[in-house]
Image (cartoon, rainbow, N blue to C red; front, side, top):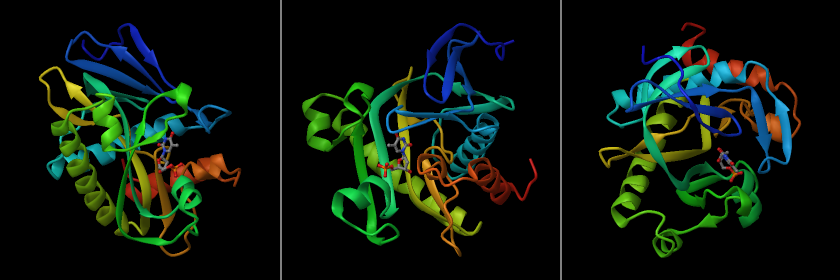
Length: 240
Ligand code: TMP
């Protein structure tokens, strides 16, 4: 019963969130739509919704087994998952192991430079402003999160980085960087939410450094669908 879609609550660039009959749960539908550069570049990545739904569920289940609380409840259909109802904090948490993308540009580093230690960054989730880079002082000054929330974000993000990096290495993948979002439950806990997929992570082949993520779409590299399929294949060996 609770798996039946209720009212549409929110439509984002890649997902739609629906109410369910259970007030504690939302249903998330993963779309094939892809955007980049704050929505300026638009396209469709055929089959992405299904792959990102499955890939995210796979990572959430792995993290839950390793003691990380996430919003994931269960897969409902190929493109839908049931999640705990949370209010998303207006902060994107990025963790970087290897210089790429905006960090490489901002600091003049060659893409592929291994960082001496993981770098944690915060971005203010505001499309009109283009999600600007902010620090803990901005977060406190703008009252975007409490000190207790910030401590959880940093601790959880670095723990998630360690778990995922180690796991992906066994699949011959480098976790270059990734973006996380956290949400507050109705009980007041701050837990991992949103998605973990090739849309929100940079994955490079450990041996060839081939890009197996959304950078293939952002940079018009071709083989976009194949890259998302390859990530799923590496995670599962093709099995469900
Ligand atoms: P960046 O190098 O463009 O700042 O991206 C860092 C990581 O965050 C990368 O893995 C892609 C991810 N990301 C998102 O998930 N959403 C976004 O809107 C942006 C800009 C990056």
